[in-house]
Image (cartoon, rainbow, N blue to C red; front, side, top):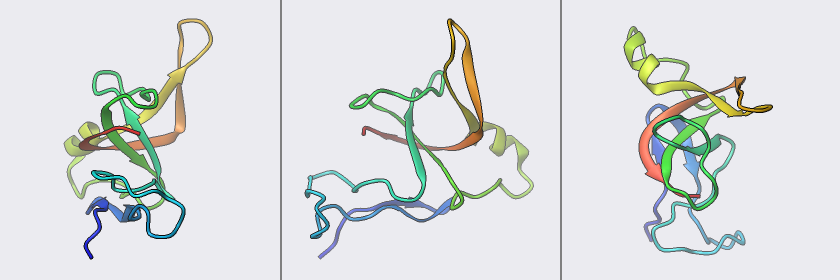
Length: 110
């Protein structure tokens, strides 16, 4: 059998295990499974804030399995990495300095 999964060379190991293989995750056509040790967010492509459940956005990943930077390519780093922001008090946004995320360029929904 062949099961769909999701990964990329900038982030290893595979960030989503196969769905529904006797592990209480239900098989779902078109799904690549559940997020594992990597932190995963679906973010708005315009402001990089988390999207609500069921809303499409760009897949962003964070964690020890994500590469630190592109080799000798700071322009690619600027385009690919960001710090997650969350709504703060009032109209302020709060940047989470420990939440550096990598934009995969892929679109997804949780």
